[in-house]
Length: 212
Image (cartoon, rainbow, N blue to C red; front, side, top):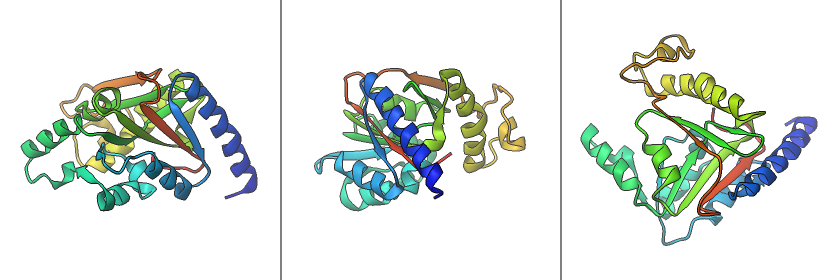
Protein backbone atom coordinates (compact mmCIF):
# COMPACT_ATOMS: atom_id res chain seq x y z
CA UNK A 1 0.00 0.00 0.00
CA UNK A 2 1.18 3.51 -0.79
CA UNK A 3 2.61 5.04 2.44
CA UNK A 4 0.49 8.18 2.09
CA UNK A 5 -2.70 6.11 1.71
CA UNK A 6 -1.69 3.95 4.67
CA UNK A 7 -1.13 7.04 6.84
CA UNK A 8 -4.42 8.62 5.76
CA UNK A 9 -6.31 5.40 6.49
CA UNK A 10 -4.76 5.18 9.95
CA UNK A 11 -5.64 8.77 10.83
CA UNK A 12 -9.19 8.46 9.48
CA UNK A 13 -9.64 5.05 11.07
CA UNK A 14 -8.50 6.21 14.50
CA UNK A 15 -10.86 9.19 14.26
CA UNK A 16 -13.71 6.82 13.43
CA UNK A 17 -12.83 4.58 16.39
CA UNK A 18 -13.07 7.60 18.69
CA UNK A 19 -16.49 8.50 17.24
CA UNK A 20 -17.75 4.93 17.65
CA UNK A 21 -16.63 4.80 21.27
CA UNK A 22 -18.58 7.99 22.00
CA UNK A 23 -21.67 6.09 20.85
CA UNK A 24 -20.92 3.21 23.26
CA UNK A 25 -19.54 0.75 20.70
CA UNK A 26 -16.31 -1.07 21.50
CA UNK A 27 -14.09 -0.12 18.59
CA UNK A 28 -10.65 -1.09 17.34
CA UNK A 29 -8.40 0.00 14.50
CA UNK A 30 -6.40 -2.67 12.68
CA UNK A 31 -4.09 -1.65 9.86
CA UNK A 32 -4.33 -4.97 7.98
CA UNK A 33 -6.75 -7.82 7.37
CA UNK A 34 -4.42 -10.14 9.24
CA UNK A 35 -4.48 -7.91 12.32
CA UNK A 36 -8.26 -7.65 12.05
CA UNK A 37 -8.58 -11.44 12.08
CA UNK A 38 -6.48 -11.71 15.23
CA UNK A 39 -8.48 -8.97 16.94
CA UNK A 40 -11.82 -10.54 16.02
CA UNK A 41 -10.85 -13.97 17.32
CA UNK A 42 -9.65 -12.40 20.57
CA UNK A 43 -13.17 -11.04 21.08
CA UNK A 44 -14.94 -14.41 20.83
CA UNK A 45 -14.98 -16.53 24.01
CA UNK A 46 -14.10 -20.17 23.40
CA UNK A 47 -17.43 -21.44 24.72
CA UNK A 48 -19.55 -19.25 22.43
CA UNK A 49 -21.82 -20.51 19.69
CA UNK A 50 -21.11 -18.38 16.62
CA UNK A 51 -23.30 -17.32 13.70
CA UNK A 52 -23.00 -14.78 10.94
CA UNK A 53 -24.85 -12.86 8.26
CA UNK A 54 -23.90 -12.77 4.60
CA UNK A 55 -20.67 -10.93 5.30
CA UNK A 56 -18.17 -10.72 2.48
CA UNK A 57 -15.93 -8.69 4.80
CA UNK A 58 -15.73 -11.42 7.45
CA UNK A 59 -15.03 -14.03 4.79
CA UNK A 60 -12.38 -11.85 3.16
CA UNK A 61 -10.27 -11.53 6.32
CA UNK A 62 -10.53 -15.30 6.96
CA UNK A 63 -12.80 -15.00 10.00
CA UNK A 64 -15.53 -17.37 8.84
CA UNK A 65 -13.06 -20.16 8.07
CA UNK A 66 -11.43 -19.62 11.47
CA UNK A 67 -14.65 -19.84 13.48
CA UNK A 68 -15.85 -22.87 11.52
CA UNK A 69 -12.62 -24.63 12.48
CA UNK A 70 -12.61 -23.63 16.15
CA UNK A 71 -16.15 -22.95 17.38
CA UNK A 72 -19.61 -24.45 17.51
CA UNK A 73 -21.39 -22.67 14.66
CA UNK A 74 -24.87 -22.02 13.35
CA UNK A 75 -24.27 -22.13 9.60
CA UNK A 76 -27.20 -21.41 7.31
CA UNK A 77 -25.24 -22.70 4.34
CA UNK A 78 -25.66 -26.23 5.67
CA UNK A 79 -29.39 -26.07 4.88
CA UNK A 80 -30.69 -28.35 2.13
CA UNK A 81 -34.01 -26.56 1.58
CA UNK A 82 -35.17 -22.92 1.67
CA UNK A 83 -37.39 -23.76 4.65
CA UNK A 84 -34.49 -25.23 6.60
CA UNK A 85 -32.38 -22.18 5.80
CA UNK A 86 -35.02 -19.90 7.33
CA UNK A 87 -35.14 -22.03 10.47
CA UNK A 88 -31.36 -21.84 10.82
CA UNK A 89 -31.49 -18.07 10.34
CA UNK A 90 -33.99 -17.89 13.19
CA UNK A 91 -31.63 -19.88 15.40
CA UNK A 92 -29.00 -17.24 14.69
CA UNK A 93 -30.84 -14.89 17.04
CA UNK A 94 -29.98 -17.31 19.87
CA UNK A 95 -26.26 -17.45 19.09
CA UNK A 96 -23.74 -16.04 21.55
CA UNK A 97 -21.61 -14.21 18.98
CA UNK A 98 -22.88 -12.82 15.69
CA UNK A 99 -20.45 -11.76 12.96
CA UNK A 100 -21.30 -9.30 10.24
CA UNK A 101 -20.00 -6.49 8.08
CA UNK A 102 -21.65 -3.12 7.62
CA UNK A 103 -22.84 -1.50 4.43
CA UNK A 104 -21.64 1.92 5.54
CA UNK A 105 -20.53 3.96 8.54
CA UNK A 106 -20.62 7.73 8.90
CA UNK A 107 -17.61 9.65 10.23
CA UNK A 108 -19.56 10.39 13.40
CA UNK A 109 -19.91 6.66 14.14
CA UNK A 110 -23.35 5.59 12.91
CA UNK A 111 -23.72 2.21 11.18
CA UNK A 112 -26.10 1.88 8.22
CA UNK A 113 -27.31 -1.45 6.88
CA UNK A 114 -29.91 -2.59 4.38
CA UNK A 115 -31.42 -6.06 4.37
CA UNK A 116 -33.89 -8.01 2.28
CA UNK A 117 -35.31 -10.43 4.86
CA UNK A 118 -34.18 -8.59 7.99
CA UNK A 119 -32.34 -11.53 9.55
CA UNK A 120 -28.95 -9.80 9.56
CA UNK A 121 -30.07 -6.47 10.96
CA UNK A 122 -32.26 -8.27 13.52
CA UNK A 123 -29.26 -10.17 14.88
CA UNK A 124 -27.19 -7.00 14.95
CA UNK A 125 -29.71 -5.15 17.07
CA UNK A 126 -31.21 -7.85 19.31
CA UNK A 127 -30.46 -11.41 20.35
CA UNK A 128 -26.74 -12.29 20.41
CA UNK A 129 -24.89 -10.80 23.38
CA UNK A 130 -21.70 -10.30 21.36
CA UNK A 131 -21.76 -8.72 17.88
CA UNK A 132 -18.59 -8.28 15.85
CA UNK A 133 -18.68 -5.90 12.88
CA UNK A 134 -15.87 -5.99 10.32
CA UNK A 135 -15.65 -2.56 8.68
CA UNK A 136 -13.21 -1.80 5.89
CA UNK A 137 -12.05 1.80 5.62
CA UNK A 138 -13.85 1.93 2.25
CA UNK A 139 -17.19 1.84 4.11
CA UNK A 140 -16.63 5.21 5.80
CA UNK A 141 -18.61 8.20 4.55
CA UNK A 142 -18.71 11.84 5.52
CA UNK A 143 -22.31 12.05 6.76
CA UNK A 144 -25.19 9.79 7.75
CA UNK A 145 -26.97 10.77 4.55
CA UNK A 146 -23.89 9.71 2.58
CA UNK A 147 -23.88 6.40 4.45
CA UNK A 148 -27.50 5.73 3.51
CA UNK A 149 -26.70 6.57 -0.10
CA UNK A 150 -23.70 4.25 -0.09
CA UNK A 151 -25.74 1.37 1.34
CA UNK A 152 -28.41 1.75 -1.35
CA UNK A 153 -26.36 2.68 -4.41
CA UNK A 154 -23.04 0.86 -3.85
CA UNK A 155 -23.45 -2.09 -1.49
CA UNK A 156 -26.95 -3.19 -2.50
CA UNK A 157 -26.36 -3.42 -6.28
CA UNK A 158 -23.16 -5.41 -5.70
CA UNK A 159 -24.99 -7.75 -3.33
CA UNK A 160 -27.70 -8.17 -5.95
CA UNK A 161 -25.07 -9.48 -8.36
CA UNK A 162 -23.75 -11.79 -5.65
CA UNK A 163 -27.19 -13.25 -4.98
CA UNK A 164 -27.89 -14.05 -8.62
CA UNK A 165 -30.79 -13.07 -10.87
CA UNK A 166 -33.23 -11.47 -8.44
CA UNK A 167 -35.19 -9.68 -11.12
CA UNK A 168 -34.63 -6.33 -9.39
CA UNK A 169 -33.52 -3.26 -11.37
CA UNK A 170 -30.14 -3.24 -9.60
CA UNK A 171 -29.52 -6.88 -10.50
CA UNK A 172 -30.24 -6.05 -14.14
CA UNK A 173 -28.38 -2.77 -14.59
CA UNK A 174 -26.21 -2.34 -11.50
CA UNK A 175 -27.87 0.82 -10.21
CA UNK A 176 -30.53 1.52 -7.60
CA UNK A 177 -34.03 2.38 -8.87
CA UNK A 178 -35.64 2.75 -5.43
CA UNK A 179 -37.72 -0.30 -6.33
CA UNK A 180 -40.44 -2.18 -4.47
CA UNK A 181 -39.77 -5.46 -6.29
CA UNK A 182 -40.77 -8.77 -4.70
CA UNK A 183 -37.08 -9.62 -4.26
CA UNK A 184 -35.96 -6.15 -3.17
CA UNK A 185 -32.90 -6.46 -0.92
CA UNK A 186 -33.46 -3.02 0.63
CA UNK A 187 -36.65 -3.82 2.54
CA UNK A 188 -35.15 -3.04 5.93
CA UNK A 189 -32.91 -0.03 6.41
CA UNK A 190 -31.43 0.18 9.90
CA UNK A 191 -29.31 2.94 11.37
CA UNK A 192 -27.47 1.92 14.52
CA UNK A 193 -26.73 5.32 16.05
CA UNK A 194 -25.73 4.01 19.50
CA UNK A 195 -24.92 0.64 21.04
CA UNK A 196 -27.03 -0.67 23.92
CA UNK A 197 -26.00 -2.24 26.13
CA UNK A 198 -22.66 -0.48 25.88
CA UNK A 199 -19.97 -2.64 24.35
CA UNK A 200 -22.26 -5.33 22.96
CA UNK A 201 -21.30 -4.36 19.40
CA UNK A 202 -17.59 -4.45 18.63
CA UNK A 203 -16.55 -2.64 15.47
CA UNK A 204 -13.19 -3.52 13.93
CA UNK A 205 -12.13 -0.80 11.51
CA UNK A 206 -9.68 -2.21 8.97
CA UNK A 207 -7.22 0.13 7.30
CA UNK A 208 -7.68 -1.62 3.96
CA UNK A 209 -10.54 -2.03 1.54
CA UNK A 210 -12.62 -4.95 2.79
CA UNK A 211 -15.95 -6.04 1.37
CA UNK A 212 -18.07 -3.65 -0.66
